[in-house]
Structure formats: C-alpha cells, structure tokens
Image 1 (tube, rainbow, N blue to C red):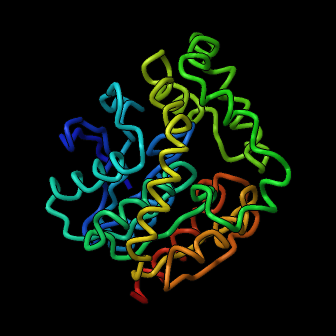
Image 2 (cartoon, rainbow, N blue to C red):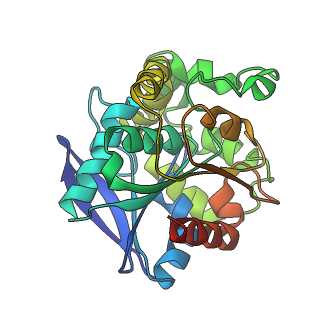
Amino acid sequence: MVFREQRIATNGTELVLATAGEGPAALLIHGWPHDWRIWEGVGARLADRGYRVIAPNLRGIGGSTSSDSGYDIATLADDMAGILAALGIDDALVAGLDAGAPVSLMLAFRHRARVRCLALSESLIGDLPGAEDFLARGVPWWFGFHAIPGLAESVVEGREAQYLTWFYDNDGNGGRNVTADLRKKFVAAYTGRTALRSGFELYRTLPANARLIRDAIAVAPLSMPVLAMTGGVVGDAIARQLETVATDLKVIPIEATGHLVPLDQPDAVARILIDFDRRT
C-alpha cells in the first residue's frame, strides 16, 4: 500500500499528513520521537481492509508548520479536527500512541461526534489515578530535561541522531523493529532547532494538559467505545487511568511488544482495531 503525503491547512497552521485507502476513516496519531510512519504498517493493513487512513505529523514535526505556541493537547486536538473537516470526514476511528494518546483523548472530549471510537496505547493520561505502580520507578529522566525551555534544544541540536537513537534502542524491545531507514526518517523529522523545540513542547505542556483532562472529565466522561492497548513499557497503567475517563472501556494486552506497539505488532494491532471498530 502506497501512502500519499500532502499538506492540509488547519486551525491556523499547516500539517503534513499521509493518506491511503478508501472507506471509513481511521486517524492515526504519532508520539515522540516519531512521525506518521510509526503507524505505516498498521495503516497499510487498515487500508487493505477497506479503511481511509489519515496519519498526520503533529505541528512543527516532520515538515508540519511550527508555531510559537499551540502544543497543548487542546490545540493539537483542534488541529486534528480541522484535518477531518478539511477532508470532508464526519467521524473516524482514532488511535494514538505515546504523546499522541492524550491528543487523541482530547479530540474525543472536544469533538465527540468526530470520534467513532478511540484506541490509546503506551502513554500516561495526565495525572489521573492508576499510574502509581508505573511511577513508583520514578518519572522517566527525559521528562524533566525536555521540560526546561531552551535547554534540550541547545544540547541536542547537531546531535539529533545520537540523542534520538538512544530512545529507539531503548524502546523496551531492543529497537529491533526500528529499521535503519525508519530511524533516518524519524531523525529527519526532528532535525534542527525548530523541530526539536516542537517535540520538546509536548513535554513542556504536560502540566497544562493534566488540567485540561481533569476539566474535561468533570464536564462528562466519554461515552464512545474506548480501547486501551497495553504494551510493554507503560503497560496497564493507561488502562487503569482510563477507568475514570470512559464509560465503555475495553482493555486488550498486545503481547511481545515494547513501547512502539504498532511497529512491533502491526498485524495484531490492525486486527484489533478493525474488530473494535466493527463492534461500535
């Protein structure tokens, strides 16, 4: 399956996205330090099974236009809603990995009619209860490093490949499915101070994001079907956190994965997403 890249104007910015297939829509949202290609294997399988797949790059990453602000999950969710509107899509199966999971969640809160069903994996959901066991090991070291404005950019710029390779090699699965070609493309998506800053802003907005999530839940929990696909690093912490978010929650462990669940098990993830969508 061949993906076609294009640019879409949305919410005051312009995003790169890849599309393939025809049929009901599936919106696949990447995390850090990845781009849309983290979902390429799953997306190709969905397209082959009759889905219209849309996989965007978040603002400032992989050629998407950067901005001085707008990296909180509410703004990023509105970016995603704008993509769906621009493409004439009423609703979609939405799946998010890592930093893409809270964006997907906020899309479901802010644009409920746009999200047919929601699948999330390998992320913490704000500061909601349920992640205590995961956090007992300590907050990952890079959260603090990335959160300090300007610091990580000044250290990493010019050393993007060396820095990001550490994360691909330590993905909980030995980096075995992050091919040399994929690493090169991921690194290119974050090369340069502007792209680096856009990625690090995903961490700098975490406190604001936690408040946004708490406020959204206080209005009303999600009623559409929600799936937690538990992987090999964050594990079932995301499922426990989502118990306070969704009234219709399903949990499926994805075996033999590290952190990069759609890359490690594309066949299983595609099959699970299709089965999950069909029950809605």
